[in-house]
Length: 501
Image (cartoon, rainbow, N blue to C red; front, side, top):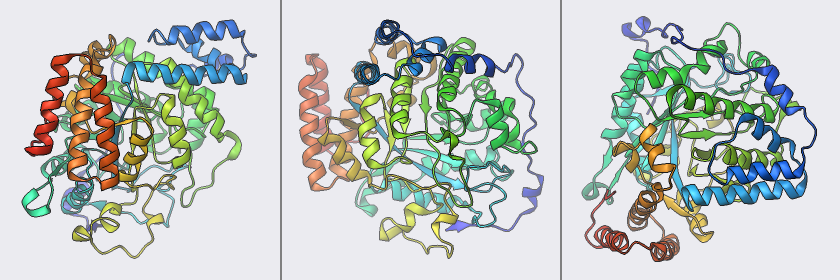
């Protein structure tokens, strides 16, 4: 169950790591420069189309070029950007959509972010964390519906130190379904992390557990808006410590990094340029850009009132997604269940490569509303006191997959690159010339076949098998096609699992 444990003696000795930023760090976000770029008049359409053409060559755009796209709000040019984003996504990632689900592990937090339901001054929030047994039950609930990837989410608190995060990762990897006992197989094959910035030694402890991506969202790159949203005396109030977080992670050996901005805290155009600047900085400093970019929008949360001045309209949200895809062509883009199902369905084609599905963001939510075999008693407080914000898309994983296959997308649960060492610079070597499709499509097909055999409803299985047949027919390499066909038979008839290239 969800635990609110008594404080053992060891807890009092825990502390947050000192904020000693890494050697060579500089604040690379120049507010004045970015603001000058977003205040310009509508550009010449010829110039806009030249930049779109450059993006279609899979060449990252300079921040100044991204600013030109942001300024081009003429309807015909916006439609051309949408079309180009669709084309670029298809070229780099194909029609695959990778699926995952988050698990919120603990919502204690020392920060007081103005937009967050977990803020320290929200006295109505029910503070707790999942102990190992409770976390294992959440994992089993995700596995029982077919998930293979998760991201663990933690507040920033002395309890959630590197050792606690590492133990949580070990628990997830160790928790597997037994077909003889549970009626079906199940395992999480890759754990990503969304947690507070660590020092280098802290990152090393977490890396040892075999994590995938470590995400740190700057929230907003605008210094003034950042200071307004994050208390000066809080841990998160240190802009530089947070901005340098992923560089410290890289120094610790984590080369799979995720960045993001929370749109609605500042002018959305500023944060688009901040993300592009950050991606370029990581590439220049470490030789590897971010593996993923996330772009959540502010949503309602308990105990929070949002300033409407910078809230992003649906139209501008679609624009920013397309522009990010054109600006950073090789970076995976994550569209979360904060958005409604209808809007997510529309934006999928603008360059998105990953989505969450069947998401619950209240602590213990998967078990409480999941399989009756793993149900536990629901805490007395309503779930709004245990979740960070309101969700927009409450569809189940099966429902999301049925929509994807019905609309020409190939669902993927692949985790092969992480386990085969294709991360960081190695991933770029595969991705830039397009060879990654020769690996990703086969792995998407085999992992999707596992889902169809083990978890799908009859309607979803029928739709999914039509999709697999269609995708297999597109494979032109005869040997590869035969290899895929052989593995699909092994999965379906022989119950083989986890076959990957």
